[in-house]
Structure formats: C-alpha cells, structure tokens
Image (cartoon, rainbow, N blue to C red; front, side, top):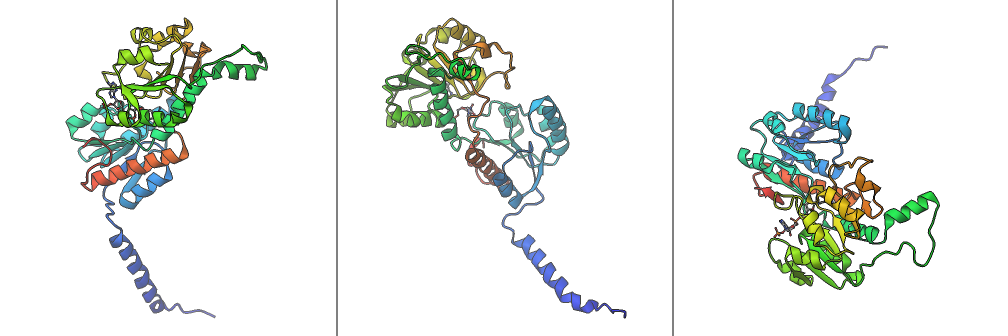
Length: 359
Ligand code: NAP
C-alpha cells in the first residue's frame, strides 16, 4: 500500500511555528543581536553568560589565561575574535595590550574588567580611544576581607612552620614552642580604607582589637563610623602590630612597602598584602623577614604570579603565601560575573555604568 502525503495538513503547523519564532525574536527585551561581546577566557560563570546571552551575540575564547601555553593560545584567539566586537569582558590580571585594542577597531565601546583592581587595564590608552571601563568593586569585599583575616591568623600563629611540622611528622610539642602573636589587644593599621579595608575592620570586631587606624589620601566618614582613626603613613607604620595593605596599585602606591617603610615598622609587626604584589619591594621584605626586622608576613598577591616555586620568599618560615585567591568563592565570582555583564548591558544601551572606572 502506498501512502499519499497530504501536505495541506502541514500548513497550519508551519504557520504556528513561524508565529512563535517571530514573536520570540520581536518580544525579546532589548535584544541587540547585532552587537558582539567577547569574553576573554573560557571560565566565565554561567550566571554572567546568561545576562549577556539575553542581550547580545556572545563570543568566547576557548582558552584559559593560565600557564605559558594557555596565555599564548588565548592571546592569538582573542586577536582573531575581537574584530567587530562592541564590548570585551576581561577576566585576567594580564595587561590589555594596544595590539588587542588596534585589532578591535572602532566598534569597541567598552571593557568590563572582572576585578576590582584595574592597574592592568591600560587606562590611559582606553581614555585616549574613548573606550569605557568598568570594574567589580564591593561585591568582592567580603571574600577578600575573609582572606585578609585568614592571613593575619596564618602569619601571627605561624602556620607555615606548623604545617611543616605536621607534614614532616616532627611535632615540637612543648609549652614554649611555636608561640605566636594574637590579634586580641593589637593595633591594626589599614592602608587604604576602601571597600576591602572597611570590611576587614568589620570582620575583626569580634577579635578584641585594641585600636584601628588607617591611612589614605583623605580622612573618610566611614572611618569615623567604624571607630578607626585617620593617621599619616609614618604614624601607622610606627603604631601597628598588623599592617594591612588594601590599596590599588598606582604610580603613587607602587613599592610603598620598601626598606625605608619596613624600617619604620615595629619589630613584632605583621605585614598583610591583599592588594597587589607590586605594592611591596619583595627583596626588602625578604631581608626584613630573614633578619627578623619584622615578625611575619601574609601575602595573597605577589610579583610575579605564579611565584616560582624556588623563589627565596618561600624559603622563609615566617611568611604565609596564597595564590591570589581573595575573591575566589563560587558566590563572589558569580556576583562579579553578573556585575561585569550588567555593566556591558548598560554601556551598550547608552546608560551609565554601574561601577565605572572610565565613564
Ligand atoms: P576601593 O574601594 O577603591 O578602596 C581603595 C582604597 O585605597 C580607597 O580607600 C582609597 O582612598 C585608597 N587609596 C587610593 N590611593 C591611595 C594611596 N596612594 N595611599 C593610600 N590609600 C590610597 O578598592 P577595594 O575594592 O577595596 O580594592 C583595593 C585593591 O585591592 C584593588 O585595587 C585591588 O588591587 C586589590 N584587590 C585584590 C583582590 C585579591 O584577590 N587579593 C581582590 C580585589 C581587589 P580614597 O577613597 O581616598 O581614594
């Protein structure tokens, strides 16, 4: 038996499907599919991708910014993908090069850095080209402040030495061995009382800190509200048992902790850096820790990153180093991605950036 196909019965189905498709395209709110947004590596959280997909055509590098090979492959991939893109989401602490901006051409309106710091973003070049720049402050303050407090505890309670004992099985058990210092009763000095610096103070409230002091470009009302006293840098270095670096890396702050400033610190002082590696002269820090000029240090950021495993800082017992994990929690990375994506949406819809660096 031969079945005869009745095409006329299919017509209403085609009309129904095409109606749905048309309405899906026309009803999509603010969808600007002709605008392309490039994501600089393959590890952007789904939550941020979802926001971008709702509005734009998203192109994404297949590579990560990790290791020599990843960096090389990613660099080439980005140079190939960027022509014609209207926005770039930059998930990296590596510099945004002039070469990449040249390749982008005149379509590129904005860059959304998925970080609070933007020292790597070539701000002057972006300004000259009229390209907007956003960052992701505030949403990461809690996570980074947690790591600052973790580093304070790790450095003051000698985690590096103590972990070494656990790993070797040779525990020095005794009443007077491996004694550390306490946060209780201490003076904590914050260099840069911004989003992160303020959250560190809030986190430490239960630790019975004797005194909070801070330094910066100017006194801040938030300082008063937190019970922190504004002092000069020299005064902070002279008084503090813990010195917490939470400033951006700029020409002003580069190497602000050096042999001179380390020389002004108390002998029991503990230096914490959650800002950027280049805030600290690492050779001077090594000398100060080795000679016990200061007591200890805790770093989330170093120069370079990764720090080579045979770096001399890693030979010291009185330093605790983390691999730049300040904002590395699922919740915070997701929040950063959504904020970066919403900055792109605003920029390409002609609205003000939510967290502008260059508006
Ligand atoms: P923020 O809210 O902008 O705060 C920065 C603070 O530093 C502000 O209070 C600012 O004072 C102060 N400051 C600027 N220049 C200074 C100077 N020359 N001397 C002293 N203080 C100065 O930034 P944030 O979100 O707290 O982040 C701070 C930095 O932490 C970022 O720039 C980034 O480099 C780093 N960071 C690291 C991680 C990590 O994973 N470890 C994560 C996020 C951020 P004014 O208010 O007077 O300008």
